[in-house]
Amino acid sequence: MKTNIFASFIVLSLFGLPAFSQVGEYRSEFAVGGGLGYVMSQVGFMPEVPQGQHMNGLVGLAFRYTCEKYFSSVCAVTAELNYANVGWVQDILTVDDQPVINAATGLPEQYKRTVSYLQVPVLARMGWGRERKGFQAFIQLGPQFGFYLGESTKKNYDYDQRNLSMRTSKVVAQETMPVEHKFDYGIAGGGGVELSIPRMGHFLLEGRYYYGLGDLYGNSKRDYFGRSNLSNIVIKLTYLYDIKKTNNPKIK
Figure 1 (cartoon, rainbow, N blue to C red):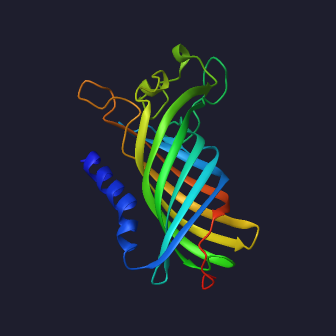
Figure 2 (figure 1 turned 180 degrees about the vertical axis):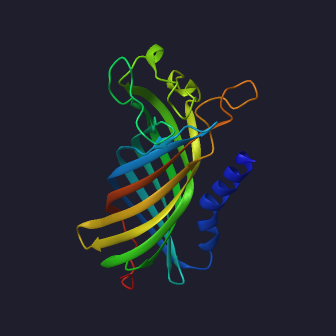
Figure 3 (figure 1 turned 90 degrees about the vertical axis):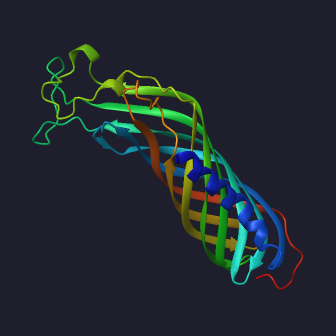
């Protein structure tokens, strides 16, 4: 089921825009740049693992090809190559929602797993507003692929000294399991605003949500987790500079 949904989004995202180009106002513009972002992520474990937000950064390259203006909508395809740190932070609490104190250290137990990826979103984009000077609002949607680079764990207790008797959740297998699936994939989408300044370029501020269709761990009947997919919210600032522009004095 996940694979069918994913395939449908790829087809719509990558082939939907060229279909419009037969009837719209022609564009052929290419811009490159880079971006910085802030990522808030979790993992959808089943059985459930209580979590807070894993917060970290994102940095990478950005590319945009604008193909046409269809009525009032400016249609484009964007692609990015980002280095991102995602993962999960466990909420280790008692029945009364109090921090679990470790007997050996006397401190509240804390656990954080960070997984590093090279992420490649390829997004179909539609914008409304100014193209060369002024503001434009936009939305975008498409597939995202993630290539595993590494992982790290931050905790303040030894595994054999965990205070499991006081934890509301007894699900702890994920604490010692390395990531099994090195390739991640899913759907990303969101929207934002763009400010275009002649001879300077384009400045974009956007919010984006990613839902992973793959799992970090095996999900067969023999595996511990039936689901372990990533999801995250990204707040991103991007700068783009025009490499190729359409020669059309009507474009504003």
